[in-house]
Length: 160
Image (cartoon, rainbow, N blue to C red; front, side):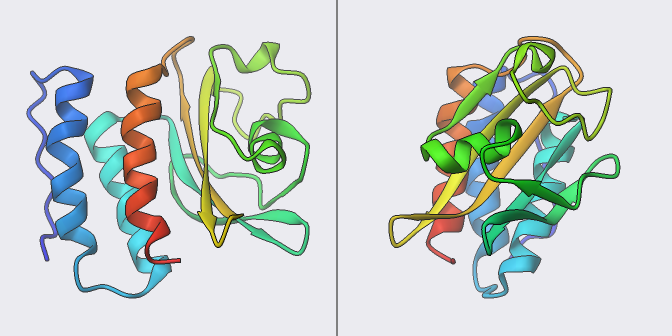
């Protein structure tokens, strides 16, 4: 297992993800504790991309409950169908929001968040959690983020 993530700041976003994924795979290798793995994934993504907020919410008992994260203090619980995370759980699809202020029902856990991407994490066909990433920049997330963050979620899904 490696405890150090190294990304060359000169790389493009896509090249950074390509460099990061094998490092994340090594980081998760041999560790069976989900919380430990999600905590390290949050820290690694934050270190690699300097997002405003990156973390996980667990789908339990009809709501989303805060899990490991990096960034400002977050909402402890989110209702299904509310906000980007709750909507992603209901529709079972990734959501990219270029401007969170234009998303109907957006929940502002941090007023600094300008754009957001949420990727559902599945187990046995059901959404068990979501990866939520916020940026201070408008229109930050794109198909590159969607593709590679989905690959990162695939690393997690095998451990849920």
